[in-house]
Structure formats: C-alpha cells, structure tokens
Amino acid sequence: MDDDGRMLADVVPYLVCPVCGADLAPADRGLRCPAGHAFDIARQGYANLLPGNARPGTADTPEMVRAREAFLGAGHFTSLSSRLARTVAHHGGAAPLVLDAGAGTGHYLSRILDADPHAVGLALDISKHAARRAARAHARAGAIVADLWRPLPLRDGAAGSVVNVFAPRNAAEFHRVLHGDGLLFTVTPSPRHLGSLIGPLGLLAVDERKTERTDAALAGYFKLDLRDELDDQVVLTRDEVTTLVLMGPSAHHVPEPVLVERLQTLPDPLPVPVSFVLSVYRRLA
Image (cartoon, rainbow, N blue to C red; front, side, top):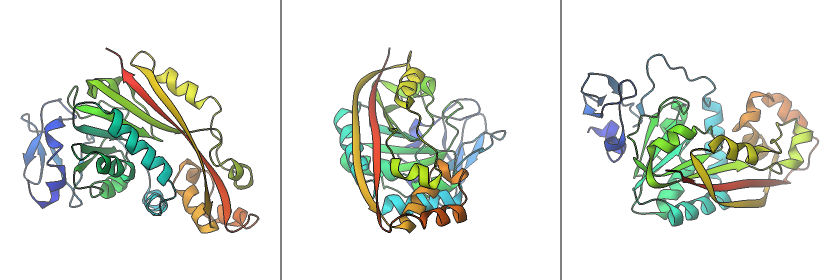
C-alpha cells in the first residue's frame, strides 16, 4: 500500500465493499473488490466508502470539525476521554478492532488506542472533513467515510468493541459487525449538560428521556451491562464557549454572530457544567 493508504493498512482486512459486500484489497492508490468496485484513498489517508448514490446530508462541516479539533485538543473533555478509554480497555472484547462509529476527528479513538497497545482502530464518519483528521489521529488507526444508516462496510463479527460518542446508533449494524463477545460503548449528554448556557444562548436542550430512548432503540440487539454518569465543570472563556457551541448540533441553529452577541451578557471566563452518560451494552446472541 502506498503512502496515502499506509494508515489504512491495519484495518483493510476488516473492510468489505459497500456495493456488493465482497472483501476489499489495496489496488491502484485505492481499494477494490473482486467485482471491480473501486474506492479512492485520499492523499490525507482515508478511504471514501460511500456508494455513488449516497449523500453526506448533515455531515459535519469544515467549520464544525475545526471547532471540535480545537476544543477537544485543548483538553476540556479530558475527564470524559480518559474515562471512556479506561472503560473500553478494561471491558473490550477479544477481537482487536475498535470501531469508532461517528468518530469525528478521531479524538476519543486515539485515547482508547493509547490505553490498549494491542488494539487497532477504525474511525468511521460521514464527513470527509472529519475523516481527514481522523486518518492521522493515531498510528494504529485508519479512517473511512461511510454512512451509519446504511450497511456498514465491515465484515460480520469484525469488531471487538464499537464506540459511539454523540453520534447516531444503528443497532442492527452494530450487532452484526461486533464479535460474539463484543461490547457497544455509547456516550450521550445528560439533561444537565451545558445547563447554564442553554437559556442565555438559546442552545438545544437535551431530551430528559434521552437515556431511556437510547436503551429502547438498542433493545432486541443489546442489553445494558453497566452505566456510569460523569458530571464535571470546566471554566471557559467566551471564545472557548463559542468554539464549544460551534462544534455541536446547536451550530445549525444559532448563527455565530448571534452567539457572540448573546455571550456578551455572560461573565468571561465562566463555569460551564458538562455531564455525560457512559453506557456499556452487551451483544445479544
């Protein structure tokens, strides 16, 4: 595999063609299946495995990806990334592949791989802008562009762990690609997340029944193994609050000029509550 695809080398054996389901192999600066379906490897090192009729929809924009990289890179969510990495390393399945489904920049996957030197990681996201960064997030990780709502381009039982942080959940596909003893790790915001900012800034509030709805969406494929709630507080400048908002779903609802204007009414810096629910689900036979 050439330089463009070197970061994919460890994960290519787990991939399948999104068109016909056959195995993929390196060929001509890309990936190809025996039927001749071919997929490019970008110069940044990720492979685009979206079928030709797929559309990115609400994929993260370049601005959202830059905001996420800046905010997470500054260590504001270290308590979450450290807890998640320890949990996956301790409970993860025997198969070495960790699939980060909805990986964004690969920040959380990188921390997980740091905690488990025997694991390899696959960052999957529908945003090519996110995949560009995820492809270089860790030496033992590869990145692909794929749609979580379509059949995932992975072999049956390929992954020892599936990680899903603030991303859509495809229960049937997560079940299919997990090894028999594999576990699903989800992180969702609790209703307390960013509580003091929601009203003043007009942000989207977290559904009070979000955890219950997540359990219900996974029922029939997974059973809850353990749950951990993590509450913390970070002190942020107004600029950092702007970055935090612009990296998440409220970026689609609150224009940046409006956000900056509303922030002028708040202290600088200011304490911000962050609250997450880390759930571990066991795959049902």
